[in-house]
Length: 302
Image (cartoon, rainbow, N blue to C red; front, side, top):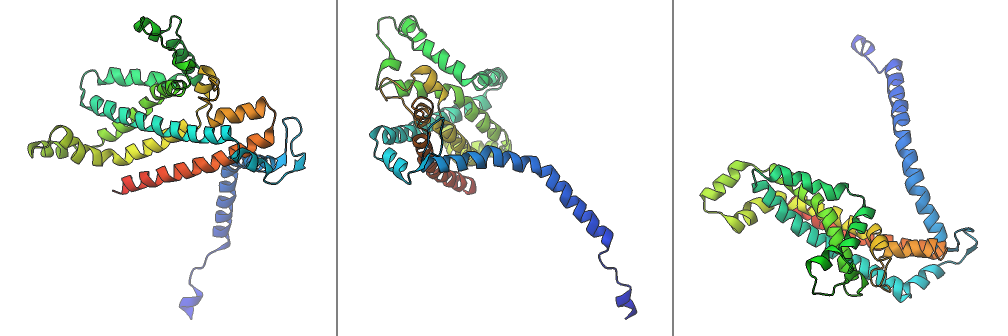
């Protein structure tokens, strides 16, 4: 009995300390929670409310219309075409960026002298604002004295005025700007490889593509998959380049969903329709990114 009576139990001061720690943690996390609510929850609630109401830029939430806005955009050929165009654009641009990024990263990792200079130059597209990138490439494609017309004087090229080439031209500018990000990520993964493993593989006869396929690729596959995920997310929300280079034209040839949302909301002042397009596009983006994330997770596990 004496042993039980002298046993130490949690005291009031310890509870006070834990209570103070909890309050301190709440105070420290409050700004983050507030930022999430203001920057995330409120816009989402606004979009959900506007998508099911008759809303204009000056008078939102005028009348409940149910699924009328959603039905309208899903039967609109231009809107559906923008969904397909944006997803196809993002996949192609992301694949091209990753392939070029991996190739450049491997070349840089093997370069011993010029590598530092090239790595510095690769940062220039990343730190250039997208509006400046769009203006730069618009000048490159200018048929009246642009770089492309100067290099090919005998060929009449105006890709930004072509329904077939306007979106690929934007994609080229997009790849130029964001491929260095892939290069940096993959290059960092290459630097984590154990040189002894590569030397052992070389002694066993692995060279060139065989060395890359069996030694290098398994080491960087997870990073490449993660980089592809990041790249496709960036490509899905492309707006600046479209706005500066083509304004969605010619016709609807280069109108992406993000550009269409801006046009509907700020030029037609139809916030309800724009919110419905945003809601459906968010579902599409979620489906695409979940699929890419599953592939990235599988690559990392393997």
